[in-house]
Amino acid sequence: MSDAHAKTTIDQILFAVMELIRDGGLPAATLSAVCKRAGISKGGLMHHYPSKEALVDAFIARSADQCLAETHSHLATIPRGEGRRTKAYVNFTLREPMMCDPTGSREVSAVMIALMQGRLTHHAMGYYQRIADELRGDGVSKSLRELIVTSIDGLWMQSAFLPQDVVAKRANQVRLQLLRMIQAETKPMDQ
Image (cartoon, rainbow, N blue to C red; front, side, top):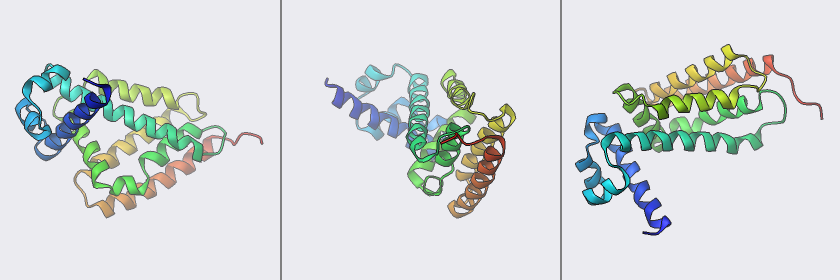
């Protein structure tokens, strides 16, 4: 099987997992349901993921990888100086189109549902550790970094249950306040 074909199959599988978890919770993401939704055989699924746990872990890990990669792509929009990585993280995770995008919020909601329903795995813990590692040494205090991550998680959780316009307004208010707090703790780099 070619790498491109395997990637497409994996994408289909993990998209099916996301939809099933979002629509019916972790119990809905059975191997049979994933096969049916992704349009693959059980053998094809088992080739990539030998168990439901491996399947859900892969979905969570991929979501974390994508979030961190997107955060890195936003660094170019932030002026050099202390707090740059933290500002990129805040701007990326709380930008209005993402908070209002049904596809983006569906994936985040599915991850949160999986975590709440028992898949707090080393991947999830690793994700939070990776965020902490990314933001450490950026000129922002540990207490502010923890406030940022907790605030963002709370808004993402709200995005699963509240109307998008309400969450978007809150996200923008929180984003602006967090950026002010980061600015107060950091200084720009000399030109």
